[in-house]
Length: 260
Image (tube, rainbow, N blue to C red; front, side):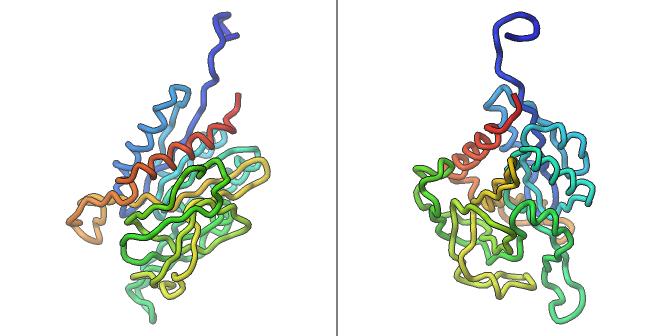
């Protein structure tokens, strides 16, 4: 029964969406994710460009992030840890696990480094981005076909950033891929070849993180100030129906833990 004595109604779901950072079309990603969240009228979403509103995170039922090179403060990382420990579910997308620094001297001058400046954040996420080869088609395969998040998903090809990851802790890998060439422009590029998770779960007690590495996007202006004009509009996996299927499945998964 509702508080006003009327008919029962479904409970509200409070969502925090963190969407911000560099070198990606954050406007496009933000709009797509908000559109998907709006498919469920129960979901009320607050949007931020970083993780520093720890009060909003603590009050959220669900968390969704699409960032690149946005590193939370230690206070925010601890808030995320505590929120997960309390049973929160976090759907982390694409570059959420990236920390990047352009090296200006030494033997790797001009290459991008992945400094280990946020070990708590990467432990929470279960991985850290290290490098990727040039964007080109690659095959994504199903690692755990019995899991509901990927039941019925067939292997598919996508042109996207194939993430070479340093993993942290035990992961339940749902989708994976094989990298056959080194990364391009990264200090640790030579270590890229091998098998890497694409879609996985990392448990944190009653809470959990669901991570999907796909979803690069870039518009003409998104490399400023490094490059004034990028010649193409890149949508990568966003052009594939299977990617939206995975997004919807992931949003459904985080909502399963929403407080009544």
